[in-house]
Length: 121
Ligand code: AMP
Ligand code: ZN
Image (cartoon, rainbow, N blue to C red; front, side, top):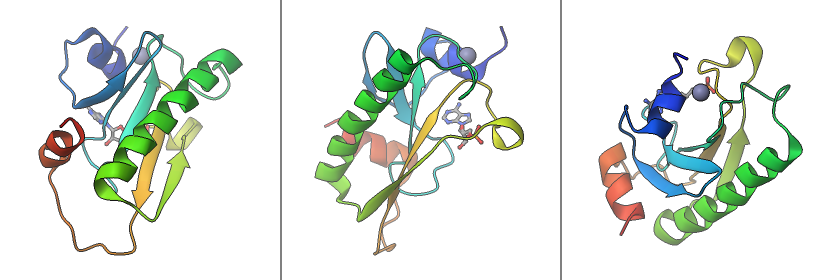
């Protein structure tokens, strides 16, 4: 199947992984909306909210909480937006939860690579 996120899971496309377990993978969004914008994906190919089962959803949110606690420690955002697009607004057709930190102070500017280095210390 020609799915970019399945290729990230099998390692044929590189990514900035910040957490994974047997069920899910969390990596930095390559075009971040904010510092440490992260995507959480199930390791099995599931398309969207219509296809995902409750157990996988729970695994996705458990991992999201782990990622949020990591981001909290390093970047101390003021809030988070959790977004999951479907249908016409879903660009990549492999379920992914966006973790988008919100900052009152937008002065900091880090590249995705710099964010990765800080989060993986
Ligand atoms: P969506 O509109 O919810 O399908 O968003 C897809 C997201 O995947 C966008 O925010 C992209 O920047 C992100 N994205 C696409 N390709 C990659 C990649 N190879 N590595 C990391 N993020 C990606
Ligand atoms: Zn896939």
